[in-house]
Amino acid sequence: MRQGILLVATAVFVMLVFGPAHGRDGMTGPVEAHVVRVLDGDTFEADARVWPGHSVRVKIRIRGIDAPETRSRCEAEKAAGLHARQVLQRLIGDEPVSISNIGGDKYYGRVLADVSTASGTAVAPALLDLAVVRPYGGGKRESRCG
Image (cartoon, rainbow, N blue to C red; front, side, top):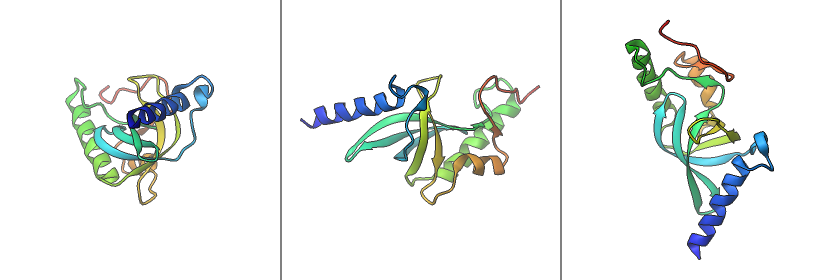
């Protein structure tokens, strides 16, 4: 019975985020999420609480920013990417985060969302203020190595 409820909750979450009824509109949230691991300076994996007592593990790309790549051939970008990942890890810490304005991302099965810390700090503006990421509105990203 419990597995059935989890399956239904997961299906509802997937339909809300990726389903045709909402298309690109996604869902507004907020949804509480517990960070599992930080992948890079603009993406992390979390368990999103989609129903009381149930969560879905999802990769979340932070809306509006672009972090340096940690897998770049350029050593300067790689170092900047590792630094950005460390800064994001310190910023979101071990407390739950709030995700909102949730939509599908076109790459890697992630969702795209606005993210706030447990204390209410908006993550994207904080990372921009610390100059570890760039603003990003979609499209081709600029090279950091020329």
